[in-house]
Length: 201
Ligand code: UP5
Image 1 (cartoon, rainbow, N blue to C red):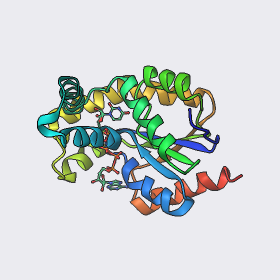
Image 2: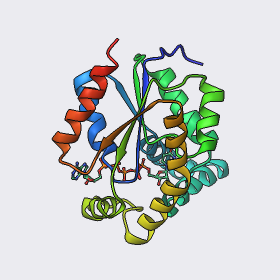
Image 3: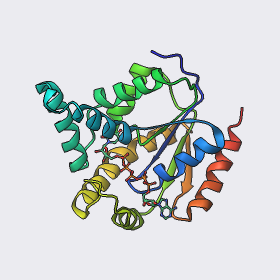
Image 4: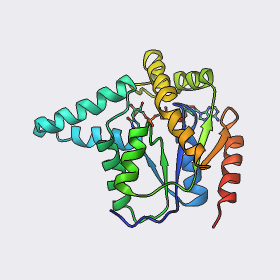
């Protein structure tokens, strides 16, 4: 596996909590490389789809499965997501990563730690009430297959049942930096900056 410095953080929070909004700001201010598990999965769908008719049955099955998991708000199996994250790290010149939206469940966490063998320095947790998450996702209006009221309900259920326990696990290890995400983007980012300042080497 790639030589990866321990300078590695995770960003977690419910769907719509602002992970994808805050991460580019973190990149801009602190120079981390942003790896969003959801974007890597989407890129996998798009790159394999580009092969068009040349798609093998295996690849067809692979992308259809990822698409269906996303549409249903379910968590894609760890072997796929961990492989994509690991590849992205190995192909990057950077040694400072911010991993966004992963791990989503205990199996993801264990698989990543077993395979990549690194642990986050801290986990930024964007805490936001369910009603606000729903409102933000419904207002996003960017044509995502999972941004509809039915799938949002499923994504929230998965978040509360599977992702929150992982955040609680990290909290029990003293790694969670909780941020009130129900404020303006700039206010949230002020808190993000304070967290990074605390952990400055
Ligand atoms: N917004 C942001 N911040 C705001 C603020 N402070 N005040 C007001 N509005 C704010 O923001 C969402 C919307 O809210 C935007 O319109 C934004 O302008 C506004 P965003 O920053 O996009 O929030 P984010 O938390 O990134 O929401 P997203 O919906 O992207 O999170 P998800 O975690 O659900 O999405 P992701 O792409 O990571 O995953 C999608 C699916 O992929 C999952 O459901 C799952 O099926 C699959 N997946 C896996 O299986 N495994 C993985 O490891 C990752 C994904």
